[in-house]
Length: 253
Image 1: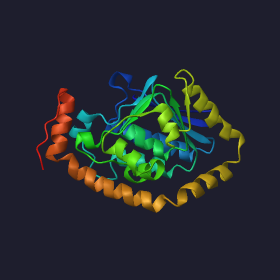
Image 2: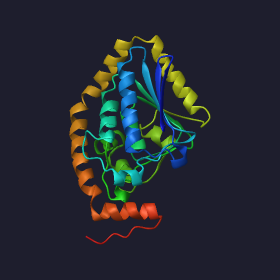
Image 3: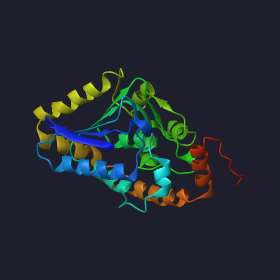
Image 4: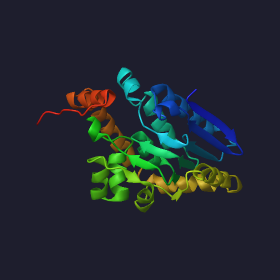
């Protein structure tokens, strides 16, 4: 099983555990994560959700071979269900970014409440380089949070964002030594056990209420374009080149 979920001391931990593939996510893994989040939402003993990866790697994003074999057909696909479950989670979501966070590994952090990042970690958004477009409302949220020109570096050029820079840009809460990031995130998540849960949930809802409609609209537009681009010659060439470990060749247009 590549997604481990356990609830201990009021914290539901969702651990991505596929280190042999750099924690690359399959449709089955998205389904398991969605189900784990929904269980945490329904469990009255759970006060906070913690999402983490393996030492040295948070997630490499989509498993491209699985993605091409099983392209997500719509918002009711496993990846869509995962996105909706994370968006709908009323409880605080804490992320322990234990290493590189690629693609959706980076964009899911935009929907977490507290993000603690390893000093060796990098965020990478390679959508355009794969012939695709951003997802999980990142085309909306990144320019809002970072400013347009910095978001353009990340989304149009695919420039990596280091840990300290992620904090500076408002994408992460704090940088910690690699050996401490998970334990620190666990301590923070456990703090919610001693806090009034309804006040915590109401405060999160108020902070996120203003963006809810815009996020839904952005996700729908992204999803439509993403699905269309997935079968485009550019995406097919970029993904095949990635899998074959060669440089892609794009025609002029």
